Length: 344
Image 1 (cartoon, helix red, strand yellow):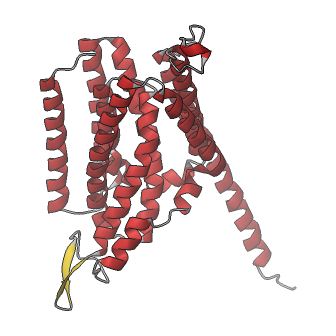
Image 2: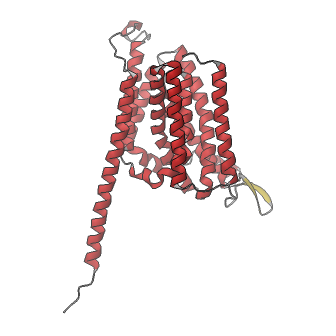
Image 3: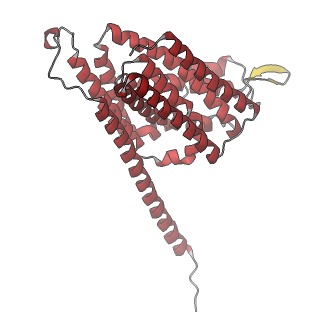
């Protein structure tokens, strides 16, 4: 896929315009968006991603369009990682709801910058060393095992302040409270940083960790840097609104971690099969390609990923609904037992 420099320039400019508009709108009127507002914006971003895929189909063919859709869906589902931990970070630092939009948007900007660097590095590695697919595949399978064992909820609950956050708390003068969405304020006649800076550092370092999962995953779908980058852009763009749209619903997706484990394991196996097919390591098959290693077509990848997400979501909602009914019956039984018995 030969993408001219001017297409890259237009893509980056469009992304910058969207981010600037978001920053201006949120900066002028920080607030907690309603479910209706969030739903509209999520629909807009999803619609833009679907339209972009149509454009790829028209200009580059259905194969590349399928790679974009599969990569975008994979990155969008892995964004649930971010949302679980973002909820914990916001609660841990008691960020006021009306300023959480600003925090998330800055986090997304940081994530785009860091993922852009990872994508460039990953593309360079793949071009020079095809055996890196073995490492990517093994890492995704390892991550899938962790997801299956612990789950996203446990990962979020186990969130601990990293070295950079702890150093910032000790070395920087931090005010006792927030001052809107500002990073600095004057407290007791002294210029100090607000806790918002610590929150930004927490979000940024968390994005860095999550990029280690998502970038190898999408390189398992497509090796086209332009598609890898745009799939990440569209997956991250609507993350702010998705955070407020889902709200407490995300806690009801109890099987989402299992679904993501299946997806990551599937992509990991796919990467290893491709590495075997292109093998040039001397200690594997004498450095020769393994022709019998099957290649998984993009339509099958899309089917597996979409089907897994649907099954995990539906199963989660069925289970939590059943748990709610069971809890309601238990509370009703306890309340009836506590009622005083009237004697005749």
